[in-house]
Image 1 (tube, helix red, strand yellow):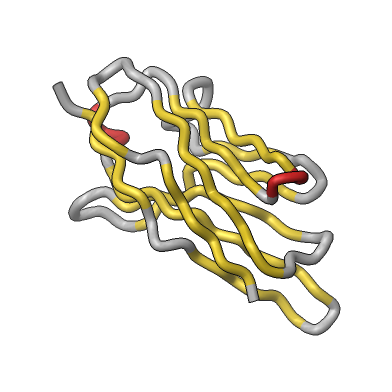
Image 2 (tube, helix red, strand yellow; image 1 turned 180 degrees about the vertical axis):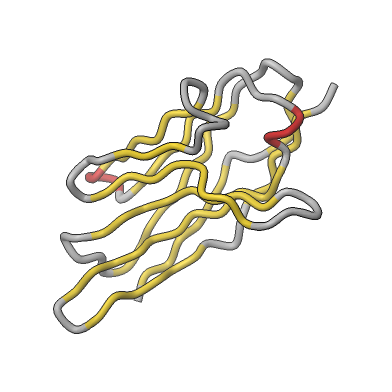
Length: 119
């Protein structure tokens, strides 16, 4: 079982920055993908960025060049550094862990953290 806890959301002005943190506890296999998703009001869930156990990263086109995903293995933590924030980045951001094992694949979600970009 894996538990994910997000933090770091809040209210920020356009052009500002925030860093989201996803702290993982429990047993994670050596093969996984951690992703940050978001859901804006009235819209579907969108993959923002992801990082694999092999350090491959992927970004949505709308955030490329502004957001950076990284991880600290010693702390079992993944970060999403968000710069040059725009009002359209306003959403609830969720951390997801997709874990690959010999016995099957498992999907875990955090509770979400609100990010509001407004003047």
